Picture 1 (cartoon, protein in one colour):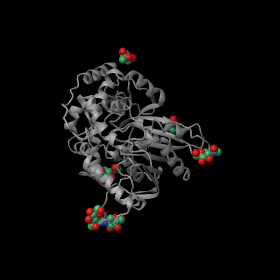
Picture 2 (cartoon, rainbow, N blue to C red):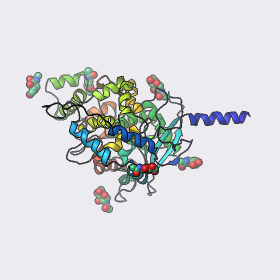
Picture 3 (cartoon, rainbow, N blue to C red):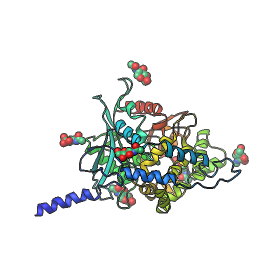
Length: 423
Ligand SMILES: *[C@@H]1O[C@H](CO)[C@@H](O)[C@H](O)[C@H]1NC(C)=O
Ligand SMILES: *[C@@H]1O[C@H](CO)[C@@H](O)[C@H](O)[C@H]1NC(C)=O
Ligand SMILES: *[C@@H]1O[C@H](CO)[C@@H](O)[C@H](O)[C@H]1NC(C)=O
Ligand SMILES: *[C@@H]1O[C@H](CO)[C@@H](O)[C@H](O)[C@H]1NC(C)=O
Ligand SMILES: *[C@@H]1O[C@H](CO)[C@@H](O)[C@H](O)[C@H]1NC(C)=O
Ligand SMILES: *[C@@H]1O[C@H](CO)[C@@H](O)[C@H](O)[C@H]1NC(C)=O
């Protein structure tokens, strides 16, 4: 009787956190188990109906440029029409299942302030090379594990044997993709760092490397700081350092170097012109979650407003097919948890109001990769060193915020060069 009760209690702990809205087959056991995406077709129909009945804002004659207030109506119509006439979720889902070896599991991190078990979805591709090193790839906002799509084969199967190979693990942050949303507040980048370390240990990768941009890069800084015995090194493509009062005074006095000027100008542009989404997500995520949960098209445009500003226009990635699929990685379970990750992140120091904040120091050897269409391009190496043992910066002439997706060959080269010298 008692043992039955204990078993029930143990089971119920996993059952409690084991469901994923609109993906009825998803289960999260205590060890990795293969997973394929299979979304409830009734939900897909309801998404289609909502897109079909979406109302369009009235155009404003003479608005110049047409996207001065956000993505223009022509973008809105293009996305809507593609969704209604061409988008095929079944095919998309099949292609995700063909491209990725996916798993689910549950991790526990007793040392974390978040004391509940955390159900996770992740991609895990092992390299055939016996000398491969484990590499954790962490996505960001408004992306998902799909960010790893174009780079994963280069990393597991590099074009020649003199380049290092990696076993790649690409988890979904809880609330994104197919990792269920946290059930309680208090789960931010620091807690994700604890969960992802627990995941790597569960996979028997006790020493590993990390790459990430956006939130991935915030999480990797917490993770490297908390687990010096496990995280050997990191390469970040979003290493933001907040300018201090001296820097701002030097900018005003025109005594900054060209790199510093470029960095501070890019960051300032992002903060003043393009951070509205972030401020509402940091402060009142539920307010905006009501309408964004109800309108899949509205949500796709919400993330498009950010994505479009951080793409390299010369690289023709990001078709409506890609945008809708990226947006579905939030819409399927509902976007609230992804939206409010910003609030948790602010509470952990990543943002201070409109500005960026500061993060824990990374003492492991680290590298940074900078891409010109990202929000933080130009960061000098000595600035990067204010928050970590950053030894190299790779500065590129192409690519933007989603480097792994947009310019996989450039980011892969940095990962080969940097990690190849270490492991
Ligand atoms: C997608 O697949 C589901 C079940 O597998 C099916 O019921 C549905 O009709 C399909 N939808 C389309 C648009 O093909
Ligand atoms: C728990 O939260 C406190 C306060 O936010 C933080 O300083 C501390 O690092 C956290 N502990 C762990 C193990 O994450
Ligand atoms: C392997 O690839 C690297 C990077 O592209 C190149 O520099 C090197 O010459 C190649 N080596 C061989 C043996 O092909
Ligand atoms: C990790 O190692 C343990 C002990 O050798 C083994 O039981 C377990 O199956 C391994 N886990 C994975 C995911 O390979
Ligand atoms: C800003 O950072 C630089 C470099 O670390 C430092 O020399 C300077 O004192 C800092 N200024 C302030 C006001 O903290
Ligand atoms: C800095 O340069 C700008 C533009 O060239 C100029 O308007 C401004 O007066 C300069 N400021 C100082 C303090 O020299």
